[in-house]
Amino acid sequence: MENHGFTAGGNQPYWYKILSQLKQRCNNENHPQYKNYGGRGIDYDPRYDASPQAFYDDVGDRPSPKHTIDRKDNNKGYWPENMRWATQKEQQRNKRTNRIVKVKGKKAAALAQVAEDGGISRKRYRERLEAGLSPEEALSRPIEGGTLFFTWKGESHNLRQWAKKFKVPYGTLHYWLCTQKKLVEQVFGQLAKGEWPGNGKPPSGWKKEKS
Image 1: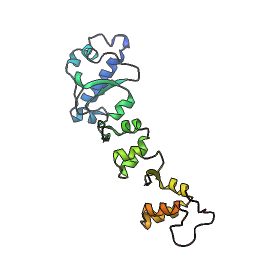
Image 2 (image 1 turned 120 degrees about the horizontal axis):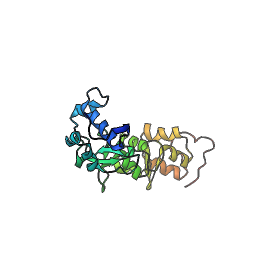
Image 3 (image 1 turned 135 degrees about the vertical axis):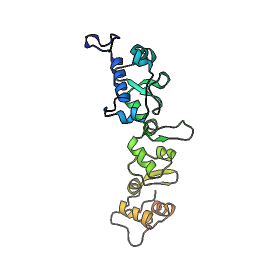
Image 4 (image 1 turned 180 degrees about the horizontal axis):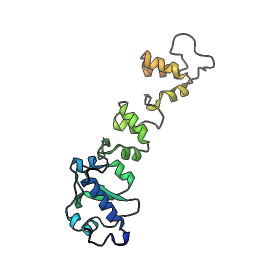
């Protein structure tokens, strides 16, 4: 029977509601999230059963209404040294299913955090990593769509941007570089000189302008 006084009048403190919810996730096998908490051994300090006030004493006031309780190590329970107040965004980055990325010279961090710090969208950064780029390359590439990038004379762009730069149809440039496997230095070098790298005549409207 609850006799601590926190439920009197039906006006429960916000932290008491948070405590009640985490207890349900850890103890109630019928709770929809039990499998991710109690079902995999996540527990809490037993002092909170005897004295809910102990929970509040351990965590203190939340910084804002957007903050809720987060576990620093998602494989450990709700214990004083493992709890913190965090926003939903911060908690999303702390999920055990998150991909951790290590960029040279920096601490390993969640993919979303690395992408945000690097000024690139999480989706684009993930796509670049999945395409085989290193964490550093995926950050340093220009913010252009696609994952097919080429570097020439220290300048890096995706294939579509190079096609625009040399005023060559995208499909033609893709054919030379990806199907015929011609060298970037050869193709770009010829185009820069105003020479057509392929067999036959260049398309109408293509100007032999030296860059």
